[in-house]
Image (cartoon, rainbow, N blue to C red; front, top):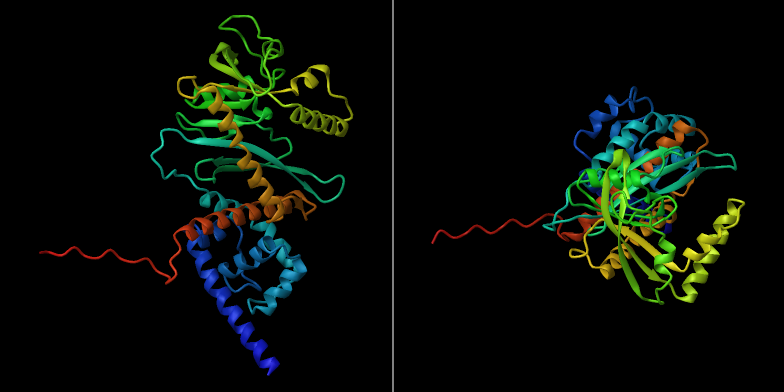
Length: 378
C-alpha cells in the first residue's frame, strides 16, 4: 500500500509540474523557440527532445540551484532524455545569448499609469566567481518605484562602472542614485535627455557652485549650523561637460548621535577593507545626509526630497532577494563564458518570477478570464 501511495503522489507531482510549466511558457516572449536556433543555443538536438525540453533542463540548474550532476539525474528521472553533466555544461555556455535575449524581452517596458513622472531607482551589484582570484561581474539595475518592476538591466564585467548614461531615460523621469552616481558627467547625461536627478551628494566627486561662473560652495560650512532633525536647502549649480550648467539645490538634514555613530562605524569598516583611514572631512560629513536634486522646490519641497530618496531602499531589497532567494550572489562557474551564461540565466529567472507575480495579482481560480456579458438590445 505504501508503494502504491508513493506512486500516486509521484504521478500527481508530474501532472502539477506539467501544468505549471504550461503557465511559464505563456510568459515567454514570442519566437523564443526560433531564437534558440538563430542565436546558436541549438544546433543539434542530440540527447535533447526539443527546444522546450532544453529550456526546462537549464531552468532546473538555474532556478532550483541544482548542480550539473544533480540536474542531469533529475532530467533522466523526469523522462526528458539522457544527458551528462559535461554536455549540460556545454549547452548552458552555448545558450548564453539566447538566455540574455529572453531576459531582455521579458523586461517590463511600459508603465501602466497616468502619472506625469516616473521615479526610477538605479544601482549596481557585484557578483564574484568562486575562489579568491575569481572574476567580478556587475549587474546594473533600474526599478520603477511606483510598480517595483524592472525597467532596465545590463550585465558587465568589473570594468563596467556605475554611470547614469547607460540607463534609458525619458523626458521628466526622476532618477534616484547613491554616491556612486554623484558626478557632473552623469547628471549632465540625464539633464540633456530631459530627465531629473536626485542623488546622494559626494562633495568631492560633485563640486557645486553658487551660480554660473560663480565660486565653489563649501558644503560643510553651509550645513554646520543645522540642528538634529532640521532640514536645510540651498541653490547649487553643477558644471557639466562642454561648459553646460545645470541648476539644482542641496537638501541636507543632520543625523542623530546614534545614526552618526553607525555611519562612522560603516566608514571605518569600508576604510579597513581598502587599507586606509577615513579622512577628517569624511568624518565630519558623517553627521549629515546630503542630497542634490534638479527638481525645483515648488514642485518637490525639501522634506519630500528626503522622502523620495528613502524609497530608493526598495532597490536594495531587490538585490537582497535576488542574492538570498535566487542565489545570484556567488557564481558557481570558473570561466567568463560560463559565468555570463549562468548570470543571464539567473536574470531570465528573475524576469519570469516578476511576470508570475504580476499574473498572480489577477489570478483566476477557475483558470480562465470571464467574458463580458453582452449588452441587451432592448
